[in-house]
Length: 422
Image 1 (cartoon, helix red, strand yellow):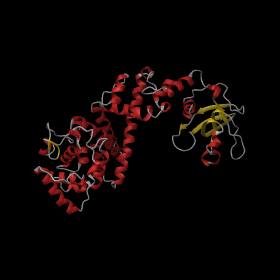
Image 2 (cartoon, one colour; image 1 turned 120 degrees about the vertical axis):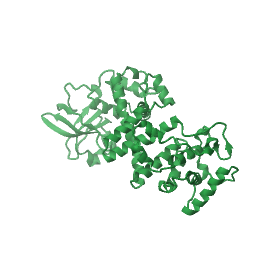
Image 3 (cartoon, one colour; image 1 turned 90 degrees about the vertical axis):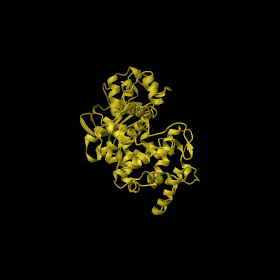
Image 4 (cartoon, one colour; image 1 turned 30 degrees about the vertical axis):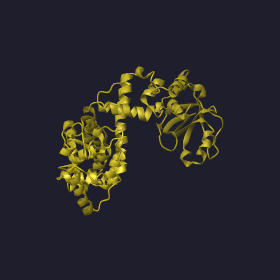
């Protein structure tokens, strides 16, 4: 058993409260369990109880064994001086406050409802895809949907932590931060880091000076990516390399090592050379990408911003000097949708939060609702369990549920897990 089970019992009052009393025999009434604390300090804040005839307001701490209070050095920590009740599974040791008075203790071992501990053990020891795989479908759909709606916002808030870091690192320059985050996500999982490095050594403001010249944009991107240090046969890469040498000298640029880029196990349409060409096309004409996103009137217009056609050479090539067997072109539909999900939606959500614009935050959520569901093995497995997702908002919530709750064993922090135990 873990302490989170005690948290569950206390928070939802799932213990026998008849003739409740402390281990010293003093009558106890729980008026309010308090608020669960996920940070350092006592487990529950602002609880209200009645001990005998006296009302108490303060914090509640929980342990499997009362002696854990000493093991965790709470007796030397002033943050625990205002604990009004110690809730334990077993009181293996009597404790006192620093002033010598007894620390009131509630022991729960004999107050757990029959069968509840068995349910908890089954839930936490299952070796299925998710702990509640056998009982998930039995939970009312309304409970599941309400929880998934909440998880969608939680996932967006989690992603906005990265947005906040980028905005801060860029000196509150929203356009620069958006450019960096977009570059990062252009690499997907395999080339996230090299794309991120490229965006750091090639700032947007420099690219903005050449946004009206596609060849120069390609020269800067391919050159700083370290991909032009070869003896090319085709005229196009020769021209790009020549242009880069001029710009490199002009701006005193230092390229990154080409070895950081990964081609292995990628489809040719996902090669970093193709993505860089598409990225250049995206910046061509205007480097104010985030402003264009803000100006878009709907999801369709927003998606259209990311479908720029790369230069002609990349219609017939995946790499320099190597003719492609089939035609390439602008980013595919699924790739654009991933950019909207992982870049645009969280960026809009955070921007709306900072600016106090709930309409922009709503637009972020609407964007996810307008996009089709993502297709991956996690979502496919949810579907096999009967949990369908009709749009990207639904798949984002399910991905968050699996990674942040199911895989992390946080069943008692999950509305579905607590519903099973109620």
